[in-house]
Length: 149
Image (cartoon, rainbow, N blue to C red; front, top):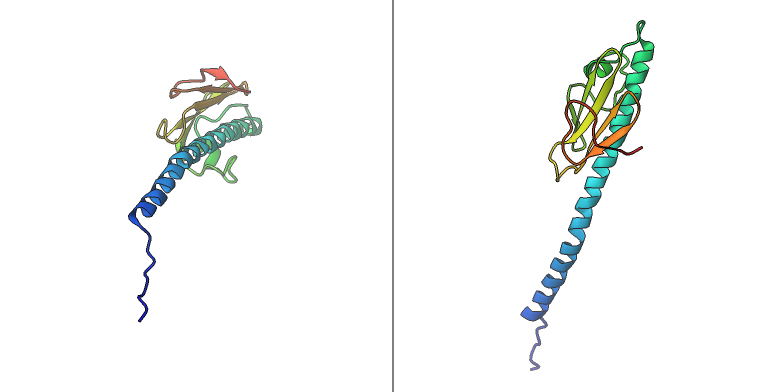
């Protein structure tokens, strides 16, 4: 009777495969996380620019030109001036929290990361001048930092 030969992986072969998989994961995961941060920041930039455009449309539609005081003035009307954010003030979307502060002659829209370093690194702001500002710390009370336009 011929002896049956069993073919199995040795412990060394399995350890080599696990080491290769671990190495590939260590190389790939940081890149995936960075691309998520970049995507969130791009969404935040588009968001503050869209809100700024909605503020200008709102002002143009008023009998006596005035900027909206909060995001609720843009979203809680029919039809809304901007519908992509949904109702609320502030609004959180794609890892960023958006706030709008407006007066009769000025406004600023701020997008701060909900978890700095995890959902985004930079904060963004647009005011009535249309300039886009960015800085690495949270913004509050107005636009500051470097101009990105």
